[in-house]
Amino acid sequence: MELKPEQFKRMLTLPVTVITTVDGNGVANAAPYGCVMPILRPLDLVAIASALPRHTLHNIRGTGEFVINVIGTPSFDKAMLTARDYPPEVEGLREVGLETSPARTVSPPRIADALG
Image 1: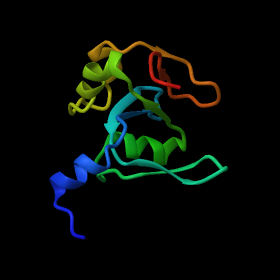
Image 2 (image 1 turned 180 degrees about the horizontal axis):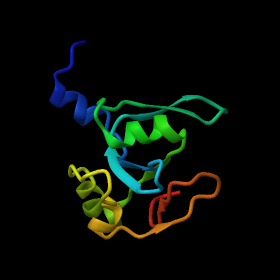
Image 3 (image 1 turned 90 degrees about the horizontal axis):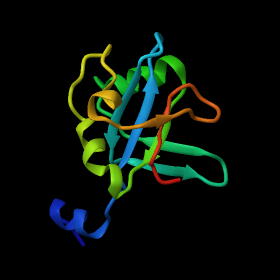
Image 4 (image 1 turned 180 degrees about the vertical axis):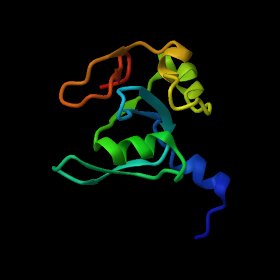
């Protein structure tokens, strides 16, 4: 069976995730990602698909750290605003008004009301 793009979207919905990172100077970054999936269980390995020029990808490669935030209804609209092309020195999380809290084991913050 061959699926057209619109048919695929109706059959396999993806959760909205926002990946948070920090750069080498500690500036937080956030961006929505639709292509995030576990690749090996029970280990905590995930795969993400990213366009090359994204700040998020640059930060992950530079620090090796990131947080995948699964977004629910309360913060969906604000989370989608993190897709804007902010300069690297601007913290998109603050710009859109998303509250954060520290992650347990990595430097990037987590979104406070993310599912989890």
